[in-house]
Image (tube, rainbow, N blue to C red; front, side, top):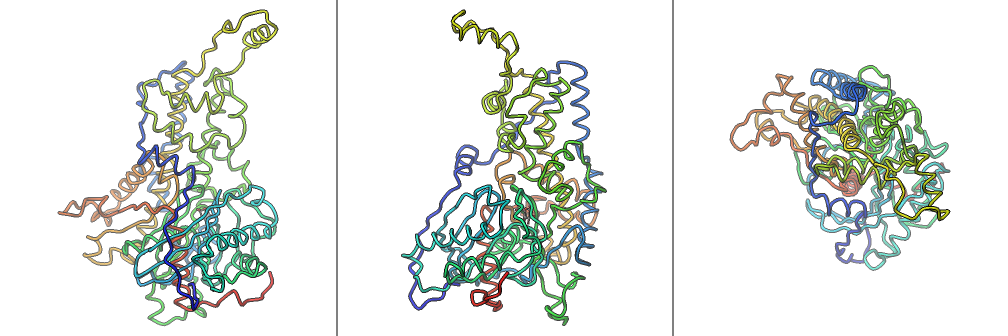
Length: 564
Ligand code: BGC
């Protein structure tokens, strides 16, 4: 919290908007999928039709398989709660309880995500976020794979420049508490310390695994003489959970569905077999409490026992910075969906079943098929798939291939032997090409949403009767889930596929039947399982985390002189 003798001027609302988000939200307020009608796909050969049928088969997850995945996820959760080192890390965040709306104060937050780093000053007052000031800083890709010190110095420099720019509202002499959102797997030792388990999402700074990111940040701040105390270290999904719970007290899960994927949820302490009783105590009062658990579900099924992985998933994994790790995340997260699609398309091309066997430089380049393209393709409802054409031809340079004839003609034109406009017209992509691309995109996008449903379904079933639906009134009241991340926010049809997946799963479980009761005012299934969009919730959540941490008198870090 900001503690100073001087009164703090109320913070004006100054939002700085991510240009990508601004573009997407302006054009796609709530995007809807416009699915391809499979019977209308024009196949150019039987071989092509057979190849597509086989892809449909590989990427479609039927209800029975979805249930098998969900059940396996649930048992992995229990294993992870039992002991350290299991596939699902089930990280104890040391955050006890949920916000109760009394959190008040002004906090600084730093949120490091895939592409941006965001510094936010948040004022909380009696259950409301009164105001925010924020600034986003692009992260140089080299910082993600270089020396950790450089990355943390960059973070401290962003805070420095933010404080300087906001000197008018933050007096120089103030001591600020900072909530640090660090969206990577960390094994917590306290609410504001922990050790990095692994880098994910394309980060790989040398020698950082096993070290404390909060300590690195604190040292970087100290070396700039900044009186900022890292009061809370938290995962983005924990932030999303806290922030949603601040407004919707029935929230039990925070989901992050963006570049990476993960969830945090509310657990009852007595169900955490691996809890450290020397830290937590072991009396009845303690074990009846709730603790936020960061599932780190990206690592689910790293042993490859249950997920229906395809050779395309394996290709993406092999070429990633962390092969054989985060295998679930690599099938569902925004960072990977475009790359999976690219891999499928290249396979079709290599078998001469798409674009007449011709690729383009862009499509041949790893990571160049952006997940954003998938959103545009999913949304295209024009009869000729004009938007798909735009992506394939204009953005990816497909269908522009040069036959020898075209190359000779171009040379002849350059040499002045022919006049412009006499080049033989190459057909660009065909309708059949575009339909097939759209179908492949749908398969990859839908599979992601359904797999996410399996994980969320597992979490909800695991917690049902413990942290929600404990009595009839709670059953009637249903449950809230805070969701952040661009896939949920902007990917057409993602949310409805996710909900449909949950419905299918719970229809198979008799004890979940109360969710389908369509009694007056309940709003049916969707009225009971409420997914709430919580855009940028992780920053507010970090402020709440800092508030909860300072409330339970965490050790101040700014005084700490511990080295790394
Ligand atoms: C990280 C998680 C994070 C998720 C969403 C994953 O790669 O392991 O800690 O919550 O991305 O940002």
